Image (cartoon, rainbow, N blue to C red):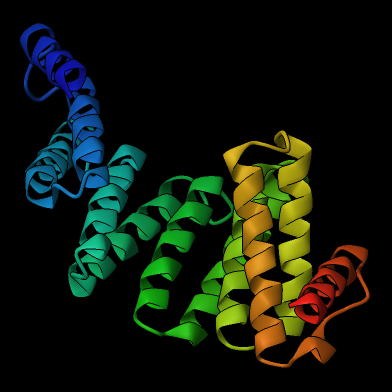
Amino acid sequence: EPLYLRALQIHEQQLGADHPDTAACLNNLAELYRSQGRYGEAEPLYLRALQIHEQQLGADHPNTATSLNNLGVLYLFQERYGEAELLYQRALQICERQLGADHPDTAQSLNNLAALYYSQGRYGEVESLLQRSLQIREQQLEVNHPAIASSLNNLAELYRSQGSYGKAEPLYLRALAIVCKNFDHDHPNTRTGTNNFIAFIVQVVQARQTAQLSQHPLTQDLLRQMQEGNAGA
């Protein structure tokens, strides 16, 4: 925090209170406060950064869309869903107009809106947004890009929550394969991907829906380990 505050002070003094780089410093400090749950302190910083971007770069600038998305994330954390939706929708419109319908930033905006709808249980809308986000990333990014793994995992989580385990499994497996190609075995992303898949298999077993699962070696190995563990208990 002291470093962020100092950086903000320097930017304000050297570049001006309304410079876009000052807005970036405001956003960094706001992100810190949001991560610490200090939402009341984060909001005015996000709002000021958004105002700077709108005034200095324009209402339809991609950086303005980024500010809208950041503020939307804060409102989502605060369960201010109506306000978050308006911000996410505006950010998505800007990305589509200024960057294109198939730009990776558009995919991220789609993902943000999907996260909001998921929180509200609007699953039908979530699926179409996540599918479109995944499609964009698969078209625009390298085949093993971590962002593709993120999209695959998000879609898998949706299907898992709906009990569509047969749809979820191949997505989890693809996501995990990409993560393992990009990160070491002990990397947090690898551990998260592995834990997500294990938790998924546990849920399927508990729901007695293993018939939905494939014969994939990893899936069958986990099932066998669980069966052996239960037998020894």
